[in-house]
Image (cartoon, rainbow, N blue to C red; front, side, top):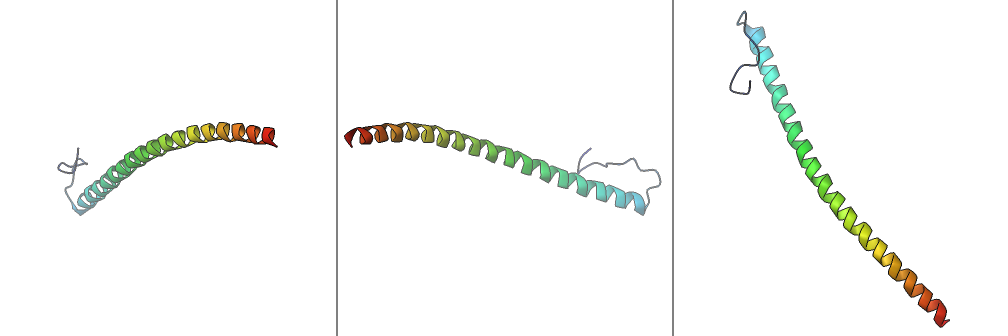
Amino acid sequence: MGPQGEYITRITNDAREDELEDNIRKVSLMVGNMHNMAMDMSTEISNQNCQLDRLCNKTISNEVRVESANKRAKQLL
């Protein structure tokens, strides 16, 4: 069920069942919020992984260029 329906089957229809229903509804909302946060975190982590991959590729490329420049500099000396 969801926020519109009831989460528990009422037997005595008393204040304890009202409180239980309210508490379960609050927990459900919190779990929903946590799910949304987890989805946002997953998206952000995926984006950052792509950025790290690009940075790693650029670093490798620059490392090769620096090694080549160092070899040429040594030959000139």
